[in-house]
Image (cartoon, rainbow, N blue to C red; front, top):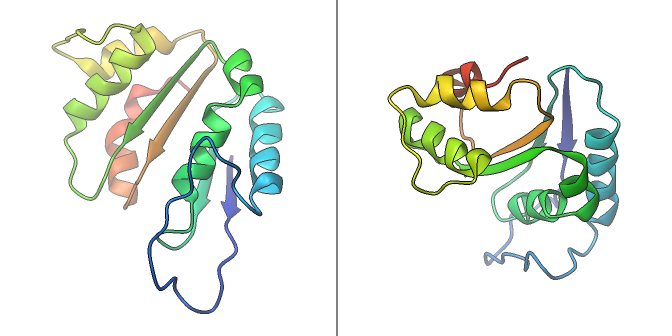
Length: 148
């Protein structure tokens, strides 16, 4: 099941880029953050995806960070990881980055990081944020890491 949290946009793109502080209040995003937190906490034991979509510079990453760092989310999941994908990405490096975070070892290495991520997540509740995901191919390349 996939939920999409759409960030409302004005008719005009922003004239200058601003990135709200992660620690500061995100004006107008409290309802969105609470909605996402509620969906994550009430999720079934199935594999769920929540997408946050909108124009560049609208604060999607800041909103996701606010949710990710929420104490109710930290307490709810056994493991969490944050990975920035970008337009050009390396699946092995992304898998290793996720593995480092879920294993809590910044020096971890693996010949088959996708399999190691999967093994480390099996039987655990987990939240993996894939930030700055530009195309579905990146998701297709990474989804084998996640037990469903």
